[in-house]
Image 1 (cartoon, rainbow, N blue to C red):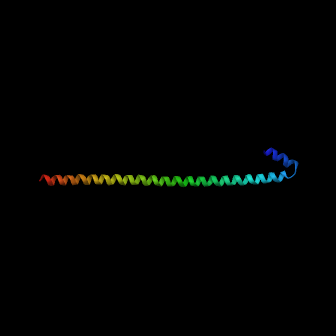
Image 2: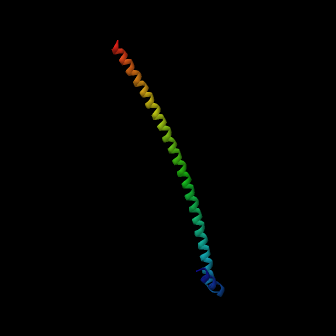
Image 3: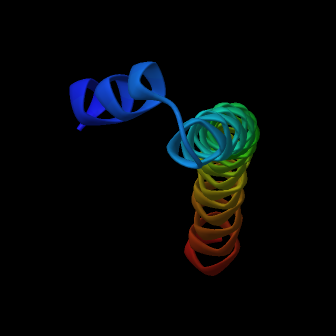
Length: 89
């Protein structure tokens, strides 16, 4: 296609204007593609950051859950010990 446009441009006529228009249109398309690529990359970075934050929150919540369960377990053992000592005497 480029050679066709070049031939027409070299031979003169309105086709040179068409070639110029085509080049301008392609330049705009390339610029839009670059903008879209940058936007996609920014969205990907934001998504990955948000995902990492959520994963960290999950880890923190799991640690807190495990601590609470361990504390409840110790409390239950203490309570059962007290109750068993109370009923033994």
